[in-house]
Length: 294
Image 1 (tube, rainbow, N blue to C red):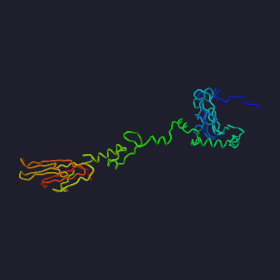
Image 2 (image 1 turned 30 degrees about the horizontal axis):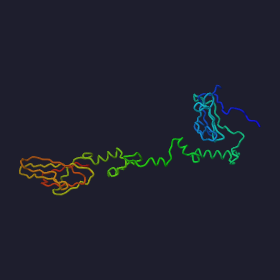
Image 3 (image 1 turned 30 degrees about the vertical axis):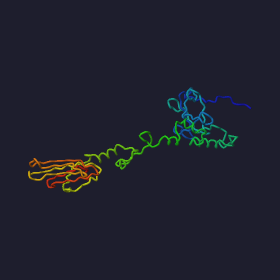
């Protein structure tokens, strides 16, 4: 029995016949363009050490980190494109049989009885979903990824003490102001203050005709309202005693003592949920409320 003695490393040449230096070798499926569709390459026959595609060359040899390397793949028939360092195609082949004379349905592994086609199919299945890797944890470390369980354990709900996952609050949740675990966006915060702050989106409205003396009026809006009262006494003898109560507490009190036909004005902030009541002579009053227009 004799064995062929030859180098296991193929040599690739440039278009001028010189060894291909800094070249690119693309490997793809048969009858495909390897420049756009590549296959998985490996540095070992067991197909466990992934290799780059395209492979790079130095002095005509395929190299990795300066060392001459062999390449392996699961496919018995492939296509190849060889380019020099200027990305000029030196040669290409759409159908290269890596095992001439051996059909893929021939038994290759005598221990298991598997054919090359069965071995190829199993290898492709492993490379597609990594389901049958012997060392899943090591493979995960090599890929710098984490398991779902690990990620779930590290990404709980965010809090003031720990980073994590947080939901964006709805406008209703922002308005309610009860949830302390959700994120508020600038727009929702802007909408909240515009609808809840004194002066935003508000204009003075004359509500004199809809307000009566000695009647409580509730602020059933979400915004504070500025109330201005103008007391107009055009004659010195006219009674101008006016008071305002907010939730039963007197906040404004005026009289006509030491005056002679003078106008007065008084104002107060009417907060959401509060009730106010005016006493006095309505005929000399003008009541203005700075509120959001209906």
